[in-house]
Amino acid sequence: MTSFDELQGLAAELAAELRPHALAVDAGAVPDIPALDVIRDIATPPQYRDSDLPKCAELYTETCLARTAANIELSRGDAGVLNICRAPSLAGLAVDALGSPSQQEAFYRVLADDRPWTFFGMTEPACGSDATAMKTVLDKDFRLHGAKKYVANAARGGIGLVFARTGPTPLSIRAVVVRNPSPGYTGRALTMFGLRGAALGEMTFDGIEVGREALLGAHLPASRRGLWGIARTFNVMRLQIGAQALGVALAISDYVHALRPQWRTLMTTRLEAARELLLDCAHDVDNNPDDRRAPSIGKLHATNLAVETARWASSALEPGALLEHPLLEKWCRDVHAFEFMDGTSTIQRLTIGTGHDDN
Amino acid sequence: MRAVAHLSGRTVGGEPTIGKQLVQGALADAHVATEAARRTLAVAGDCPDAVRDVHERLTTVDWELAKLLGASGFVDDGAMFGVHLSRLTANCWVGAS
Image (tube, rainbow over the protein chains, first blue to last red):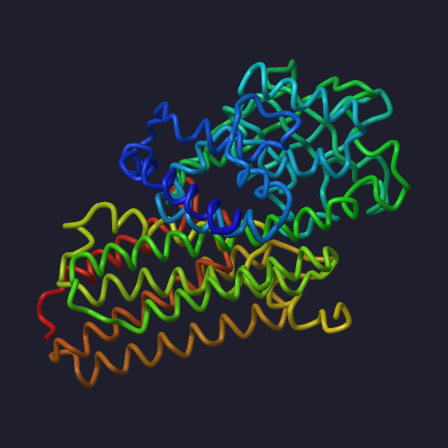
């Protein structure tokens, strides 16, 4: 068995420990689950881990392929529960890309000592996917003014990144490390339709003083200090959203086939094909980190197929099945969340349709 | 109407979002599907299988329109809450074969 297979097996074992908490997390609980501590460590760069893990776990932070394969399995347990994990997540990947060694050390030290949730403040209420139109400002005194919305862990997060404008051009959009609580920081959780473990919220910054040392990217060339510096990070994360969508779709399919063991449906084949597609896209990202089309193809197909799988499940079973099977009903809500994460299907289609020159 | 109102107040790259071709295409598809659903109910409203088919098609249209609302439709009593209630109602329809 290869390390890759072992990691997938480990993820499947951990996923089984997430599933029993799925409905409680959907109802707003945040249970203490030992498997989440293991997942948190797996998702932390090896030099900052605080426990011994199997050798195969190192693959997770080394390749997009391993991360994607593991997240499919973990989400097959329950993506909502997976999202209450206090992992470095997107904020961690962005600190890896934009932070100096001392900034990375400081960020991961806080994660090790306080075990906070992390946030990644990019989206603003008025401009959604159009990040270059953001209004949040970091002034010359290193004070932050503005607001973000639809940010995971906005209210409960303890540390994260916020993107803000330091000047008029797209190159002047930079990332700063922000702590919560801080004077001038306000976070509010939003009531979510599904995937409630992600705890989306909104945050406002009323002159938060962040300090010069919190501004990431000063050691990098001007073109890579801000938005362009994390383009590769988004390529990796886009596939993780697709992986979560596919994981939920597989959970739905598993559930339906457990209720109807005599069925041999085409949906099983379509989901396995989608897994192959996602893994191939992840392999492409590992080989060509600047290729934006592959992650968009993977994410678009997985998110669409997950919604389709949920629709198939409710129509294939007897009338009233969604009320009779609360877990199925929950997953049929959860699958819709991925559409709005890391670019809507319209954005992905535009990237795919206009990105021929990337290859 | 809700999607049109939402999109009319937004811009992408300095241009009105409502004017984007992919958005206009999605709105047109939803309009056509809704008109077809009306006619189906007019000619076969007493046929349980047809009613079920119409409701499933409308669930699909609901989702395509909800996507145009972005994440705003997914939180704080956004459109998806009503869409899901409609879907649950359809799922309980026992008249069809």
